[in-house]
Image 1 (cartoon, rainbow, N blue to C red):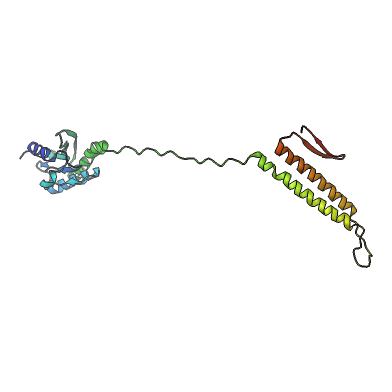
Image 2 (tube, helix red, strand yellow):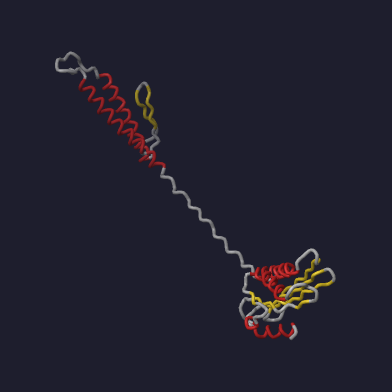
Amino acid sequence: MSATALLLVYALAGAGSGERLALLPLELGNGLGGSRADLQAAVLRGLAAVGRPVIEPDDAAGRAGAQYLITGRIERTSALFRISLKLVRVSDGGILGTEENSCEVVDCSVAELARQSARELVRQTLGRMETPAPAPSVPTVVMAPPPPPPPGASRRVWPAVMLGAGAAAIGVGAVLITVDGKCTDGRCANFYNTLGPGIGAVGLGVAALTVGGISLWRDLWGSAASVAIGPAGIAVTGRY
């Protein structure tokens, strides 16, 4: 049966079937120096590059389920090996691509020429047509940093510290004033002289309490008061 008749038979039997390739028996010329089985095996290796199941030429039953058919002829003319391959779609008999190559007998292997030609045929046709669409890009989610705390919350810490320090200083100063002039031992050979430090501690405590209280009042009620400590004492100015 001719190659044209075989194509018609396979087109009728394999229409609508799965994504498989089938290699029809190659036509071989004279003087190739290689067996048909070896050359067809080389073509099958090249067809495998498309990543689909490839049906061998002697599997007549398997060819009925192929979607694409490969026909080809290999011959030797003078000092050249020549190969011609066609990729045919079974559903409508349309020729999707052809590949024709040649090389000098002294420089190449006819089997390698067959393998590379088959590989290029499927790469240029099925490899290009069946390339899956790129997956949609996934947008990068950037987590925003947490918002900073309100300015007023951080400012209120320092007035609280000032109030605590002022209260502690007044307490220490009161103790120093209380023990001033008292005996340091049972015989009263020595006396405590802590009046000056006590008064200073109380003064610093009062100043700290004043500054801390006014600052806290400003933060809570939004007054525009300002506090300054100078030689003459504590000066509080502004709008209340």
